[in-house]
Amino acid sequence: MTRISRREFLGYSRWAVVTTAAGGSILAGRPGRAVAQPLTKVRFTLPWVAEGSLIHTFIARNRGFWKKRGLDVDIARGYGSLAATQALAGGQFDVGQAVTSVIVLQNIKGLPLTTIGVLGYKTTMGVGVLDDSPIRTPKDLEGKTVGWTPTSGEVPFFPVFARLAGVDQDKIKFVNMNIDVRYRAFMDKQIDAITDCAASAIPPISARGYKVRWMLYATQGIHLYESAFFTTPKMIKENPEVCQGMVDGIMEALAFSYLNPEESIDIFFKEVREAGFVAKERENVRMGSGIANFSGLAEEARVNGLGWSDPKRFSEMADLVLTYLAKGAQKPNVDELYTNRFAGRIKLTETQWVDAKKRNEEFAKFFA
Image 1 (cartoon, rainbow, N blue to C red):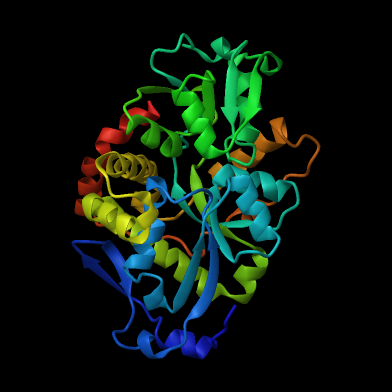
Image 2 (tube, rainbow, N blue to C red):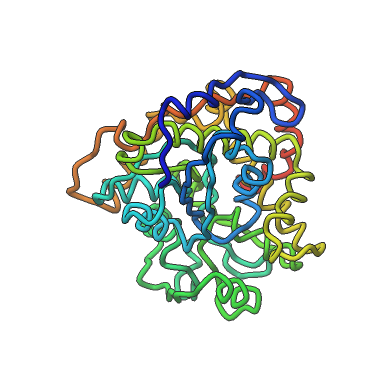
């Protein structure tokens, strides 16, 4: 990582809180200062491929929300939250985004990871079936074939879902598939169901004319945060200014996407040209970003600012992991799992919050 001194950084990172129609209450640096300064290189990993639920990342780059904070961010695609957390802990990346409960799970298993900003507060983890499927309840999965991607964030928590729903997991045939093969096999009815996060799976399938029903893990009492920014304790200690800039930049991008959904989609297609600007792909991105936005518009963020997290929720996630997935492991201190040190500096006004909720209310149905 290219380093700049604290004095140089602070020279152009003394933020002033301003409110704009586009981005809510955001942080703006002193005009003209950042341009002359060297940028700090940051290696960032997505949890998955570029898609609508990750639109904020590309807004942050396109709108210069990271650059004006002195950061030159290289965005790499991911191969699932499990893979992303392992790669970052192994030193391949500086900051990443992943399913929050996976970050907690990996921490308990010994990886040095800490959440630095929550992006989604309502999980969309679950099992998807086509609308005309005879599978109506989780119990109906017994005797059926389910496709999943082993490195995906929802996979470790399927046994918890199955146990709480009274499903005998041994009676289900699981097929390991990559994302493209899995979706196609699902639509062609080569498999009976898939596991995934609805924010990732429903948009590309629905945009191609297939109706999907989703059995959320949350219906069995598994209430998890959806996704978050994370890094290592070492990064937090040695590069706190970079962590602050990364969180502020992505939260400013979130605020922008909440209030400017159509322009946000335009930005996505400018940044991700391989996505293909056609009607079905635009609807795919619109749905993915809308579901993610609804997940982010939670009371924690309204009251405390974007990215803020409730320590009680992290304690509960740790308890769930210890109960079902890591029996015998020691529960870490909650402050090892997350920090609010960098979160909450960007906050929508009450008027903007109401506007954002209204713009994204059609996506509430995916959380029912």
